[in-house]
Image 1 (cartoon, rainbow, N blue to C red):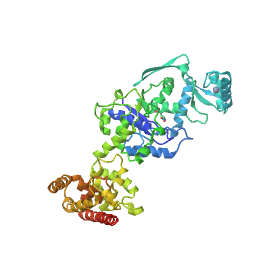
Image 2: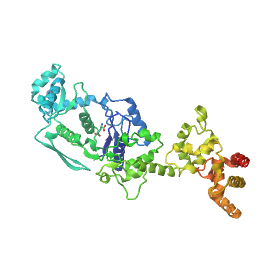
Image 3: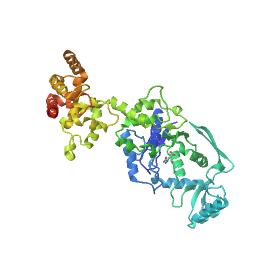
Length: 503
Ligand code: GLU
Ligand code: ZN
C-alpha cells in the first residue's frame, strides 16, 4: 500500500508552531516510508478565510524548505486540492448517503432548533444537539419537499444502538457508544456548503489518504468520521493523533507563553533549520543523546513508534539553544548571507535607501567579521549591534573606561601607547599568532596581558566588552586601528591634564 498523508489546514490564521509540527510529522512520516505528502486547503469556512493566510502558509513552508508532493500550487492526481473548488463532490457524496438511507434531509427551521434549545434549558435537560426530528420523514415525502424547493440541510443518520471502534497508533483502541456521538450532525448546509466532517472524510477517501496524523484535539471528531466511512462503505485511514503542544505551565501553547506564529520566530532571527530540528522533537524521541538532526536525518529516523503519548512541552530556552547551535555550524559566507537582511534593517552599512545596501568592501568586511560573533550570538538580529564598531567609529568613551584593574590614568596612557607599537605586526597575524606575539611581548616587558589588552580593546572597539580584539584589529587594519588609538590617547592625555590642573 502506498503511504499517503496530508496537512489539511484551514486558512483562518497564520501558521503557528502546532500546525507546523503537524505538517512536519506528516512530511517526515511520508518521507520515511517513501510515500507522498499532500497539502489540502480546507477553506470551507468562508467567513474566517483570508487570502493572506494562504500566502502566509506558502511563505512559511518555503522558508522552512518543506515541500509537498501534491498540493494546490503544484497540482497532482487528486486535483483540485482546495475544498472550495470541490463542492460538487461533497454534494454528490451527501446525496449518495441519502440514497443509501445513511443520511436524511432535515427541513427544521432555525426557529424550531432555537425553541428546542430554549425548552431544554428551561426544563434543565442535559440533552444537547439535534433531536433527530426529521429522521421520521419518509423518503417519498422528503423527495417531494426538496423538489418543491423547500430549504433543507443533510444530516448523518447515526445508528444509535451500535458503538464505534477505531485504533489510534498512539492512544490504542478507542470505542465510543454511538449514542454519545453528536446526534446526527449536518453534513451539507442549506447553501450547499459542506461541513468540515463531510469535506474532510470525502477528501481523505478520494485522495487515497492512508494515514491521518493530526492533533489530539481532533479525537472527538474521529468516531463520527469512522461512522461516515462505514456509511459510505469505505475503509477508514489509519489514525495517529499527535500529543498536544503545551507551554511550561502545562496549558495549551498560546500567545500567553510567547511567540507562536512562525512569522514571529522568523522576524526574531531564528533559522529555519533550528526551528525544524526543535519542532521535530516536540512529542518524539529519535536517538538517545543526539540532539542535532538535519531534515534528511529526521526523515530517516522518523517512525510512529517514536511518538510520545504525553503532551510535548515547548521550551523557548531550548529553541534558543538550537538556534545558537545552528549559527555555530554555519560557514562565514552562509552566516553573513543570513544575517545581512538584519544588518541592512539596522542600518549597519548606512542610514537608509540605497545607502543601506552594503558596498562590496563592506560586504567583505561583514563576512570576515563572522568569526568574531559566531560564538556570541543566539539570534541573527544580534549581529549588527555587535559589529557596529567595525562599520562606523563610535565616540571615544570617557577616560575612566580605559583603566585596567589597579592602574591609574597616567599608567593607562602609557600602556596604550606601548600597545600602539604592537598594532602593525598584529594586524597581519591570525588569532593564534597574534596572541602568542602579544603574550611573549608582555613577558619580556613584565606587563600583565590584561593590563595591555583593556586599553587596547576600549581604544579599538570603543567598549570594555566586545568581540575579540585580534580579529577586530585585523579587520579594521593597521591604519584605522592606529587612528582609533591616537584618538583615544588624545582623550586620555586631555583627562590627565585636567586632573593635574585640579590637583
Ligand atoms: N482543517 C482541519 C484543521 O484545521 C484539519 C483537521 C484534520 O487534519 O483532519 O486542522
Ligand atoms: Zn429536522
